[in-house]
Image (cartoon, rainbow, N blue to C red; front, side, top):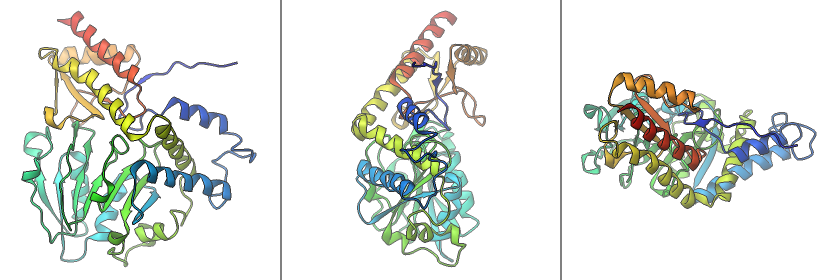
Length: 365
């Protein structure tokens, strides 16, 4: 007998929606993974069965992103927040500066952590505009003597996203892609390093993906704790210690799902269509709804907006919750509303929100 469960309209910013097909497969395999008589959570990370899961996930990520052979793919722990520390610890040498582009709360946190290890400098910032936009490429001050240039590709709190990345030549470019990784095609070879927490587009929380150029890795500092060296994890295929095995299994299943959906071209097209439903309602509301981000910097992953009247905004969020919409409250630091439309959020869910927004406006003008 098939039991159907009512699914929420899930717009959580992270941990976020996972593909239903992936959840159902994990449910079916939870107790007995491929005839082992054990859950994947019970497998030894040194076993052939888990190594197959692990290596297949790496191979599929390489295929989807067309990752060149001179890049390592690592599965780490500690979230993107630990990367804020690991990056300067590994790559910021004494007396060196590192360049950071400030576009929101997470880039600010990365900047603050770098201060503990060296001298970070702002290469560009949109803070004076309350992070409503991504700085123009012409505004970025490229310091070729810097250890690296760091940016955050998508800003979950403010709803902005890079459309075109800077060209940095020999200066290593590092990107925190936690909230838009695998949402569109990119040229990995433009980056010395990409990192992302899994809990938005890649899987459940607990896994951090790092894609790092081998030549850049070779420049890392060596006199740092073993677990905080990228080289430790590179040399051991991310199996130096016990990894988050279930998270890697789920990440691998999400990658298979992306391939089955048509790959990144199909995913990107769908993400554009999903976001358009909601942005069109905002743009056609005659100011009843208004967005935070400037139009040229709008995110396809996090749609941030307000209702013109504060009391109506409270009513909107309350009625949306009653109607089954989850996660529409803006981040606690800025308030307002936010719809996170990550890869696994269905098109129908975004259409349902757009329809709800139209009806709410009709009922409350």
